[in-house]
Image (cartoon, rainbow, N blue to C red):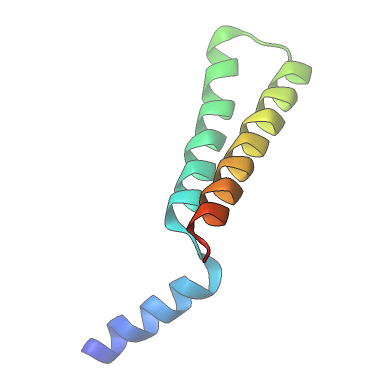
Length: 70
């Protein structure tokens, strides 16, 4: 049974290197999808909001990784 956990962990590692980064992207996608719909924001601004949020997540992740590297 432990070999199944090992296989699943390895498959997960193929697609997700940084769990916090992946979770932040998923949360931001949900926010960028739900909030503008309820506030009636134009699609142009929604796209800009999505881009800026993802860029900020990427920048934070890169800075975090750079400070952690030896």
